Amino acid sequence: MNTSDTIAAISTPLGRGGLGVVRLSGSGCRSIAQGILRFAGEHAWKPWSSELADLIDEFGAPVDKVVVTFFAQPRSYTAEDVVEIACHGSPVVLHLCVERAVALGARLAEPGEFTLRAYLNGRIDLPQAEAVRELIDATTLYQARVAAQQMEGSVSRRIRPIKEQLLELISLLEAGIDFAEDDVSVATGDQILARLTPVEDGLRTLLSTFGAGKLVFSGFSLAIAGRPNVGKSSLFNRLLQQDRAIVTDIPGTTRDTVSENTSLNGIPVKLVDTAGIREGSDLVERLGIERSHQAVADADLTLLVFDSSAESTADDWALRDRLNDRKPLFIGNKSDLPKRFAGADLLPVSAVTGAGIAELQRIILERLAPSGLIAPESGALTSIRHEALLKESVLALENARRAVGFGLPHEMLLLDLYAALRPIDAVTGATTADDILNRIFSTFCIGK
Ligand SMILES: Nc1nc2c(ncn2[C@@H]2O[C@H](COP(=O)(O)OP(=O)(O)OP(=O)(O)O)[C@@H](O)[C@H]2O)c(=O)[nH]1
Ligand SMILES: [Mg+2]
Image (spheres, rainbow, N blue to C red):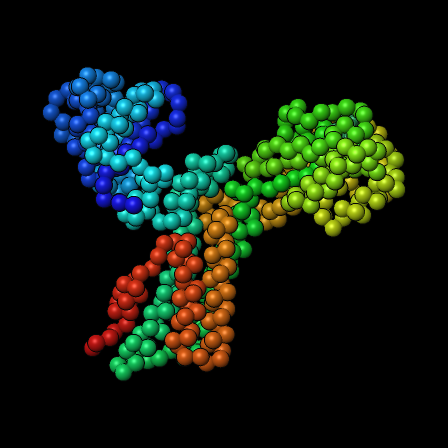
């Protein structure tokens, strides 16, 4: 992909709206914009200010009245010269605007290319670029808040010092090898371990934030299971705040799993209602019940619902024992009716009146995030990709620690350290050989 040309794209969603914005980025954006716009007077392209213009077609006829904003490099989204043309939000006008820009030398931007350029130009790092996508994809305000902090570099801020320490160690060993004949002292095993430990600890601490962090964007799935007629579908509807699943007093009403997405304290939740579990009477019901078991197996957490207004029976205990290894939450529904269920500690709720639902939601969150939801600015790991990479790095560091223990030559040790650096680089963006050389020359006094 060429990154020195000027790119153009409609930056607002498809369809009609009050406004639609075409964005141009690259050194040619002003001259291209000049060709498709007509300003009232002499136009000076004053940076970070807006001006009214006509958008004109190839014959010079006006098609729209637009507001043009110029962002001078490097203080722009891409760190290049950027022109934003705010048209009225008509798809035909927006397409004409882009077509005209392309006719005058711009190229249609690839998906994400504006953000890619911001990254390539060093304005943002990879986690920040990924956060832009997450902010745009956010479905809850909480997700948006976390993404906004990541765009500000909350994750990078936590990884950077760890990477710095690793680079220091690499440079130390490289210097010992490359300049052995000079009077650069070679680090001892203990000195190396003393530098290795904080890197490992730092990564492990960061990795430990992932348990709560992954909830933010990946969310969790919650299955509602139990015997027929205990009120699973009623509870499902209550948690969804929507009359989604069919509720009747006939046992065996729900015959297939029903799932719906919602959110809990800003965390996405996939809620699954299931068919009541019993010895199935007909084929369809039996197939439905198989799916109930599958849903429980797939779920991050299961609510095992009992009817607290009915006497407990052997069937209740059989079901409890059967699902026990999934560690479900035991719910006693129909708490608005007199209690007759005995022999188990159930969390009382009423799907009909809503009693106990807030407490149930609190307990669900407590189970999934025992140490609480992450603060948006905490820089907790939220991306599965980052987690996998940092785990790989920790493994390589463990190998390095072993290599030190065996007294292996530093050349070998460096292989492990580079293997630890590579995945960190894949999170934050690459380290070049220059980075290491610069460090060697700036932090060590070589050459006398
Ligand atoms: N009083 C009272 N009745 C409830 C409550 N929850 C559900 N019910 C009633 O219990 C009956 C069964 O409710 P459903 O939600 O269909 O039960 P289910 O567990 O989904 O049943 P199946 O789909 O057949 O397995 C309906 O008549 C509901 O109105 C509750 O909290 N209090
Ligand atoms: Mg049901």
